[in-house]
Length: 245
Image (tube, rainbow, N blue to C red; front, top):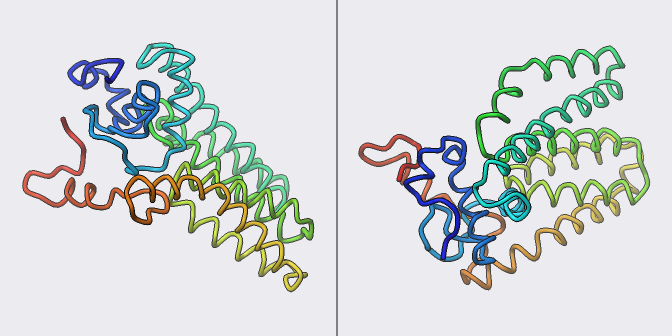
């Protein structure tokens, strides 16, 4: 049985409706322990989106209550914090590559960038944490161009795995960053082993989710499987590109 607000009440609360899939997946995790029913009706398990952010929301629901005002405040705080931390990462990337002045300028640009301020306060989605993870990955990749320590490459692989479970689109982005770090490292012949360590770390974190999807749906689904629904949502008569009850 689903817990929390009814679908009719949910649609009147714009914050929850801005990320309806996220909120209902979190609700399902709390109510049934199952990653499923992303649209507020019992529909069984799903691999509609990556599991990371709904799991975080489910943890907040457990602490602050399902669809509660306290949960809203906690989510808004975390999303704002994620966005604010990007400033620090940009500063260190700029300092490492172009100098401290560039880092300060870059951080200030992000701090006053309208979308960096508005998105965390308006939308229930993994956008802010994805940006933070992408910027952290870039910072680590810059550091890897000078590193021959296996633990640094392992850290990159672990962050890669966490990022993919939050946002599947980051799989390719991290792959490009890893390839660039290896190519720019003057000891890249030795770093082949380190690249392997990073890829194994990624596989170790993605493995349980891939196994779950195969056992549940009897086919290989690396992270998510929402192409059909997205195609239907934006390519049919009267389609708006947005989900509606």
